[in-house]
Image (cartoon, rainbow, N blue to C red):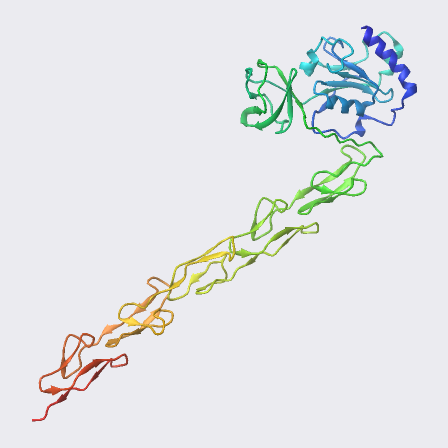
Length: 430
């Protein structure tokens, strides 16, 4: 009690040396590390018995700066302040000034139940602390399953407020979180030196904390996904984001937000800022911009390649008549793959100078009919048929050879024009 009484006497002297009346806790933007909530009642922090007999230190700081110092101290779990008097109490074992052996609050801030100024009989001190508040760290959870010494993982009851890169503290051990799994399983960078039973408190800290402070009259920095000197000077959403940011007079001192734009039609990706790619069969690019619609897109359909036909590649292309294969859309230049190839002239036909169906095939000499290109397998229709030996001759057919009948002289030869043979068989005179 001697330290407590001395501290509160010093508070009266400090009022003449400092003026913190313009600095209130509501003027401050909270950091992303610890989170503090005010307890009911006015005064310094007390437990359920109305006692403050715990490790603490005293600082000549107003509320917003006291919160900064408490956040920067991994062992600090609460603070009490009144900006009008310019001094605060930090509940920590760091640079401890009173009750330094009593660390129950440091290990379990849930023991702090309220704010109260009833711990002193000095009316002058009571009057000074009528407006003060007790703020306690709220980012706290419990060990769900016992933690063994040497372990690099633990399970907590609630991991919703924790993120990879955050620090966590159990008693005096501070660890950096490297992974968060389902069911509250947390992996840390280095092994625990001690073992901890179920129910022990786990507190969030931020080992790589960057404090952001803004007082009224001092501009707040632009929020995530926005660019500008500060909110007062104006913030604009980054390229690929839509929204507005306006200055306000209450935390976090701005309203509005910037939202990522979805990838436009004919493209795919998470969103425009992350990058969008034209869909298969489309050529072009998607670029983030700062003006509506917050992107430019040149994704356009690719025409069907040679030897194929159709509206365009995304709609589907088919090999032309006389060609076998297929056309598929792709995401790399030329944005399609094509295997359309000309079909060779079928049996009993030939083409010149190219022996393919698209170039044209004619039935061989001694054969009658035609060859037509089609789009279904085998990609041609052929009616080429052998021509029978003409009159006055005999044989299997013209292509295999015909001979003039007995009593006739001459020959029969195959040709490619109707009647697909030439015959000179004539009766021999007596």
